[in-house]
Image 1 (cartoon, rainbow, N blue to C red):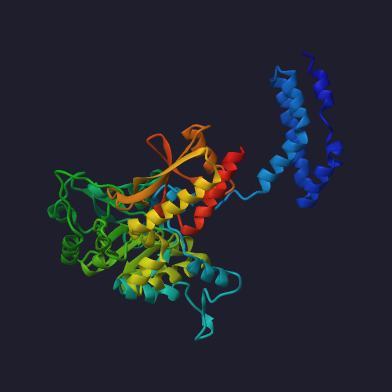
Image 2 (cartoon, rainbow, N blue to C red):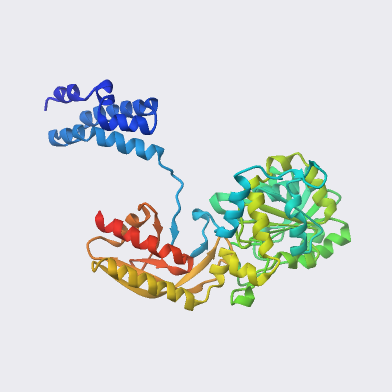
Length: 466
């Protein structure tokens, strides 16, 4: 095959720039960007000619050069960050953004960030204020703590706490609590970066009070408890409760820090779930410092919330590291709005999406499933659709053993495989993220909002057109 004629037939940049469709692309974006895309596309065509042994495929590639330029440009300028419908049943889905923020909260945040705000301005004195003042009193009222500080995430909270209290000193922690969190981040590594020296006591499955006692010396700066929220050790086990650790801390005048991770503020056992220790419990049992996430069971934005004794919190506020891990105006506005809901537990469960989904009765989920099935059956008879029992999960490293009864809609498409249907749904304009159960695509309705049912139907229509 003589490829020379194909190389010669590749259109020049100037000729392509005179094409009507390309002119429209330039109007839509800018000339420099379009020229760059054209050159890359020409290079790709040259490489394709070089590698291909089919004249027909080369000719087709040359015919599609304008279309490929359009597609490349549209792909580049389109937003990569998209709304998705979570049909997995995992409520706090780390890969899908963890906790959902309610419209009420997002509207308030939107109002604040569209203009200037009193982020660090004291409206009473007319002088510089603190970005923490907007919710410090609120957090203290809800949790019973003396003071509070908020940083960008819980790993940052642990880093700041230990750097402030125990830099170049020793921190005692149980071996069974040295956990690894998502993305291969290990809590011991975060602690080490603080400058503190970890003193591991006990064994993986058993730690006793004596293990802490025997490790205390003049270099001990803190006792640390880490709530293992993302896994459980069962069987021949023993651990030291936070109230027992605080007794040891008081005896030796050493601060006790508890990393609660998920940071639940209400007793979930009242709603039929396993008991998860609340933040208030830790404070009541004597922990000097407690830290937890804002975007897990709390149901707010990503944040690391630190509460506890005022004298320790004040030290952290003066630590230069605090500025490196501080929150921005988006987080401050969202967190305050979410915390206000906790002044009334009934309202919190109703208005905070994470709590609402976790505690949603099966009857309400079944209603959503019925509605989805009815609407999908109208679209096409090429689908086999039915409601099935399934189980949801809390997710986000919280309540790992908890399986919550739910209802899912199973979708089978006669003309394509399960794997292909799952892939096509997540590649729709508004991606639908499902899970595969028994070689079927399943949408768990616990994590699907009522107003997202029509979006699922639209995505199925997209699949039919392909």
